[in-house]
Image (tube, rainbow, N blue to C red; front, side, top):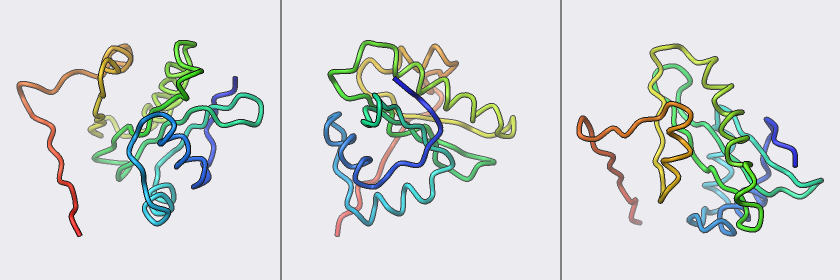
Length: 133
């Protein structure tokens, strides 16, 4: 397995999200989002993409870790840790006052805690807005 900083093609991004149980993203949304990523990490088995992670944000004041996923048949092999290690490598280049956040699904908070991420409650509460058209 290889985990490295790498661009991610739109079709690969969409496939990994869907295969890992994340929500679908349109071609337009995926193209815009990927083009505006601060950094992307791709995990491959030979030439086959099997996982990914990204950091989005302004690169100075606020950033967010997103899209951490590994295809189910490859889970449990430490690949999520390797993706996080690469992303943390990038995070270390950010200004020390940059607020880096993430949303942890399910038990993923256990992985993120190993890299220093802490629960924001009770000091804050995560919220979202679903755009309706």
